[in-house]
Image 1: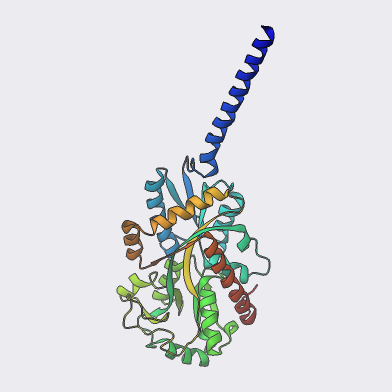
Image 2: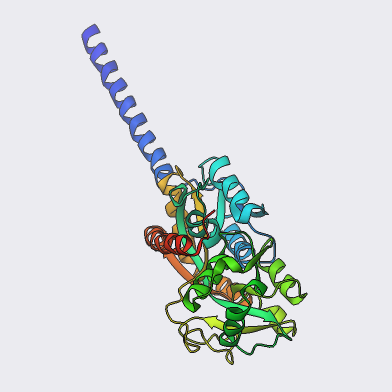
Length: 336
């Protein structure tokens, strides 16, 4: 009898252990898939000033995801260092747990690394979750400037390179690479021109409108309100086709500037080491968001186009961009 009871207890014990194991497997499966994320507030860091393209997209993303995930997504502007102060905070100082994300763009990723001798952040430090939006680059000057298009401005700069001033968030910012690529195509010495520091697109556009800087190079939407207000005019749109925002403005291709590739984009980065399940959750949420009429309407209000890329494609695209920008930075003396 004792032997029988011992065997029975052993069987009960084994059944109990199996049930526990099965229960643990069931519980861990949602975690494995990121099913429990998010459980609390998420901070979405914008490394540029409020009012620019990255900031406005971040606010649209935060609004959508707050509803989609049922947890607040809060936008935090952390400016400085051409976008690197905020990027370091989000990618190096924060825990890789998905509760701090970065709304990045070229300036805080490919351009920064290509244009900096000892970058404190590299592309490998970004878990690129998904690209969100893009826009062609435009060249804008004060409304009463004497040039009717970019070709006329280029001819003037050839004669007066030292008089060309342009605004950028830093020596390796988006505007810097846009200007460098244009000047390279025109055979003008980039180093003879002058960069004026700004906190972002809204700041630099205001500096041009106020006559403190000659040229603003930003995405098409970032200067639109000042163009509509009669403060700025656009000399060219850097694209293969005309922009619906500026139907009367020629493209750089039309004006004879071929092979110019700099284009503005923004997307989501997470810290290296973030669990793959969480990266995939962001990737899937952005894919769904880009089919949402409300979100598309928000982008249209700020004159940007949805341009979703999933994580792997986003990474490949950024790596190709980095290679070209590194070459351009070396050629034009951007790297400091």
